[in-house]
Image 1 (tube, rainbow, N blue to C red):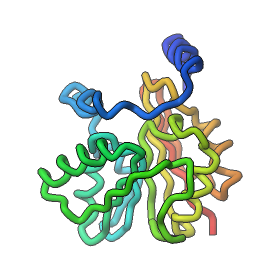
Image 2: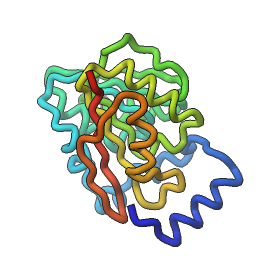
Image 3: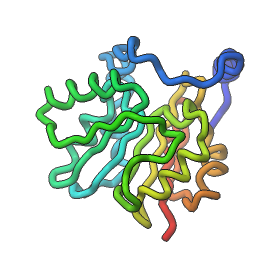
Length: 200
């Protein structure tokens, strides 16, 4: 990832306040026509290489920008959303139900704690601009290693203007000690899409 002047300014501004989740009151900014013109959520979801029968966990879905695309690819599978803010889950739920996706799980909780799912539940996990906001990132990744099946995919989407954006090197340093191996990295100034696999 190329660090820009704006990246540096945003990180320094955020350093004095600490990490916090994106406020649900501003959810409309996460899912708007301008963002959709700049990014097709389907292209980011492609890296999961879903076949349709997987169980997928999305942590920090916001108002559902990627969630509808994820649910649409799971013909016989299931999508589970996990967010610290019940209000965000409610917004995502409305969006998914409007798109006729009703077989979705919704769980509120802290991603830095133990995830409330049995071991080896999920085939894949997707986090878009989320991991930087988690206070205990290592605990989150360790918990993901538990709930993902061996060989399961862990995908991070890190975008420009996110002051908590982690580089590919930072994601590797976070994930590899927890039992993940880097499988794919698509890097640009605007966004990074990074896929890890859970080792057996």
